[in-house]
Length: 399
Picture 1: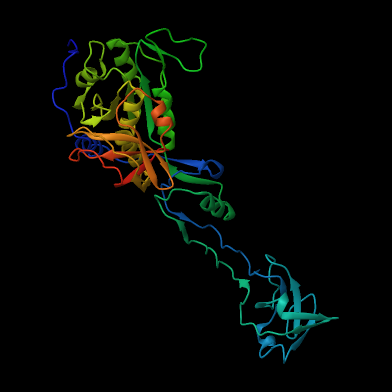
Picture 2 (picture 1 turned 120 degrees about the vertical axis):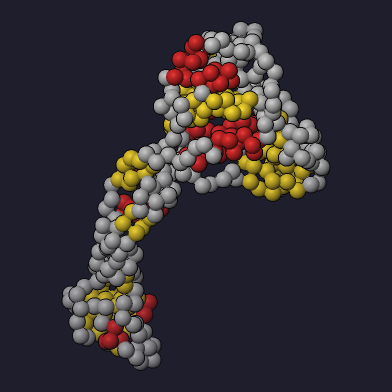
């Protein structure tokens, strides 16, 4: 079948409608793998973790002082001290010096703190009464053998990993990261980090790098192809070679020009759900599926691509990655008016300082510096016509 290119957008979809079309056809990754704890930060557990040991494994002194029998200190006070013999073994009328973390000796069931005692030769003057197991961490007090330490779906943080390592564990079973394949397209693109300098009409390929980094930040595992020329056959081949991915991001070739092949290729190879969205500045975005793999076609202009990434790719990748954290948003007062296009969701870049948001730009889909200068963005809903100076808004922080 010949591809039909160069046609205008047939019907523009709303942002919420497009996102819903993606999410309702996808689900979290169910594959799991064992990873070493040293590499497990940020990973999500795929099963409950039970403790293989008691922690502590022995009755442990929780203070510097003297291990005693609590009964021997009954009634002790500064005015009526009790005298105990300092010895190597605990027992009736005897105490043993201990430091924090040491095993409490057999026969002792409490620790008398240093500040509640006075050493007089080989005798200890106890000036306070202690109750059984005072200042002693009992066996399994922190974590008991067989206790569920962390539940499936928990995202591992440094203290979680330290606890698991303290229990003697080496690995944790976690969900695999969703595989995100990135296909940059465009004959005008020049590879990054190369000696090749862009000629007039050319540009360095930055969108693929942005996609790679955000896929990793949001919990995915990214891989990027070489730049694919504006050739339908080459683009089809690149897609076919990456259908093992959980998500394919295609950068460029998604508008309505004669060499914008991505949307008609999706329609030919699978199902094109959306081509054109009511988002400023991400109108050319296309969404579809090929052999069950979701495909997001990002506009070639970097700011438009970034807007589409945040609005469509971020929720999809975080859902696949079992990440429940949402975009960080903070309230702020607008220092100036935000102008928006009626009927379109507007991605407005703003600076942020001391609770005040300063609008930077709502247009300029190719001006990447406008995002680099921004701390966040404000989404102006389709049904709202701009935001007024002095109005309180939610600023989504740019990661």
